[in-house]
Image (cartoon, rainbow, N blue to C red; front, side, top):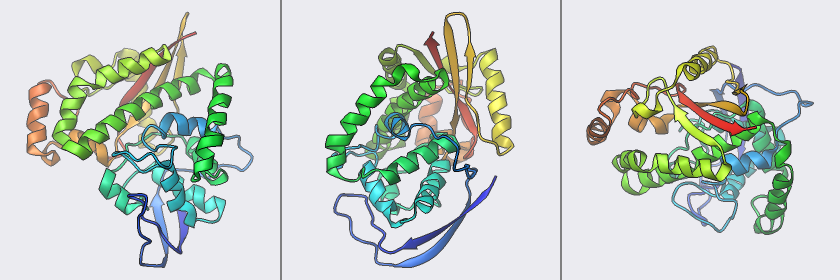
Length: 325
């Protein structure tokens, strides 16, 4: 892992847990040094489409509409404003990548938002993808209402026109992350409004429904599997176990996990990692650290549960996306 040093000039840090948040009293100059697992990309390297990644991985929770408040996450406009203290593009990108590589209390700048909404799930983005997202945010006035009303529709049209040119690995990633975003939004909503116990009930009753619905939207078979499943129906098969083991080796070696596609006669299968962070441990951490009522509910609903004992930054399983050629 490469250690990234970010020098932050906090001239007027804005707390953005709500639209009229106050300005932070303290004005300070601090250095944040963290093991992020992200590498500096060569300036000449071609980046993925930043808007496409925002659309598939971010906007379900972080609304692109500045006036659209919800109970799961700050709007993308609020995020841009909070990180606007980084005037240099390189510093802005580093700061966004720092958090996306490891969503945690230590890497979060928006402390009040974390208190209000909780931490976001780990999106398992590659370095080039997180950089593309950060670069798009920096270079576009996404914090303005006029961007949402004029530029957002144009960008949606552009994506639709270029859809057929997407590679299978990018197409599968979009499907998997869009599904993850919908699940994550609803799961976080349950946790924030009713607590972790309600989230267990949600996963038991609704998770498959949402996954099946997204499969219908994208006309692809989308599922989650694991070598340590909570639901026995999510047990990985032989090929999936081999990919899970490969992903684990990459993660343990401090490498970036590279998604895999396998082509068959009429279909292409895409495989994408699911990596844990603090949010996951409420239900998947060490047994002794899970709330007693939540642990009892899990035992009742999933008597063959294997999905505990995780720490942060571990492979929880994989997304499998079956696409018709």
